[in-house]
Image (cartoon, rainbow, N blue to C red; front, side, top):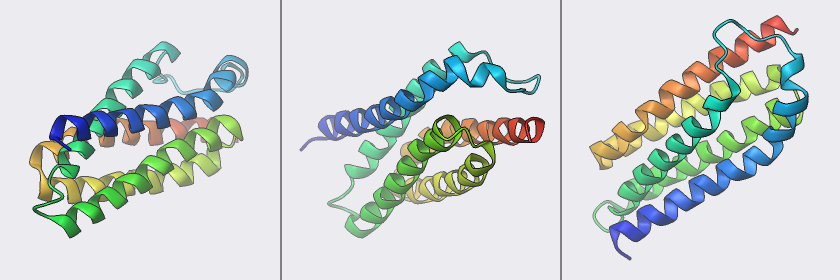
Length: 158
């Protein structure tokens, strides 16, 4: 399989995870989320879909670039993609905890673990393919911001 096919597959997987998480998010954004207190820096709701779509695409490209190095660095690539799958799973779980269960405290604990897994994935990716590592930096930054937002929402609604 060539590099483009690997990138296409990983983008589709990432977008599918994002879509599945959005199925739980959408009803809560319409019904529950407007009723809770949010900090002054809470972005408008419309910004989340394009930002997450871009981040899922960047994540998919990064994973595809790493997957493409499987023949040269088999063990390192398998380990890096293992961390990638863990963080991708945690990414989806956060939506279920925050929006599905409507539990900002549990989501806050989980997002801290998510950020650490993204960081570990970044460290693994950058050793295999620098571009792949760099593609995860916006994701790290956004999840860091999301963690602060999550913490603020928990604090304001405790």
